[in-house]
Length: 423
Image (cartoon, rainbow, N blue to C red; front, top):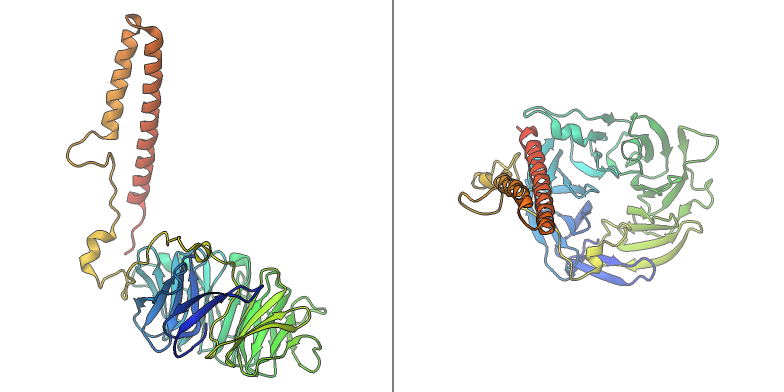
């Protein structure tokens, strides 16, 4: 994604060939403000505007759909399961449910503007970093279950950085994963989400603007303000909790090529390629083993977001459509700003056939068929035995099917009725 003054603001290209596959037009994206939603939509936080741009992936030349927000969005992320969206607006974190558009929570534990947000790979936790030098770990379940009027308690608050947080990323493993954080204090730190312990702190000669981990978590890659990219070995011996990274000492562990600060980093799934974006208006693809630049793509503006991902099916198939259209996103908790939609917010559960009036229900039909079956059995002595047996078998199968349907509807309605509602 490039902050270009006109034309497309986001491009998709194939890593192997470098061929451009798609372009999405409209606006300029904020740093840490681009997200894939459920493999069907692309979301982008617009610089200086209080709305998100949304594009359907299969439509290449469309103008974005606007999602109005309560304020300027500084960072954005979407849950890997496609169910939730997080946005940083000033010092608050806004959590939306994608299916309904309801604003489920507003979290106010930071003291200055948010700079980055990230979910764990299983969507169970999320992390927030801000200019107040804090990184906070949140349990999504605890956030959703908090009582009305109360503030959820974060799982961890990490305060070991001394200057604003610039980037963070989560490894693989859900709540057992490790997380990396970067800061202007010239350090990158590695944490354990489950315990909250600090595992490693690396000091550099420059402020760190971007950080990422490879899939095996053997290496941590850090992008500096001077355009350098540093490769930190996480499995080096002896193990040190704090270490310094000196460029002159670390031979073969620095990627050189960018002429301005590195803003984003991403590693391919096989761990062989590194993608980097910079304010020098270029995106570079690197071979990690040799540190050689394989491809340089030039744009007409600073690169604010760049990442490698497997191509979603909707992007490849032009005839595909999103399974569910994006709803209108509420700007107030519990959708209080739209009372006229309150009737449609609930779940309408209909037991029985899809018909109006006093039609025959499944239970009534089951009773009628059962009576007919009993009557047929009584007539077996007087009629054609073979034909009646066939009819009895068919009726028994029909009754069995209807009973299964009735039981499924009863179980479903019981779960909905007994489910605790949101206050």
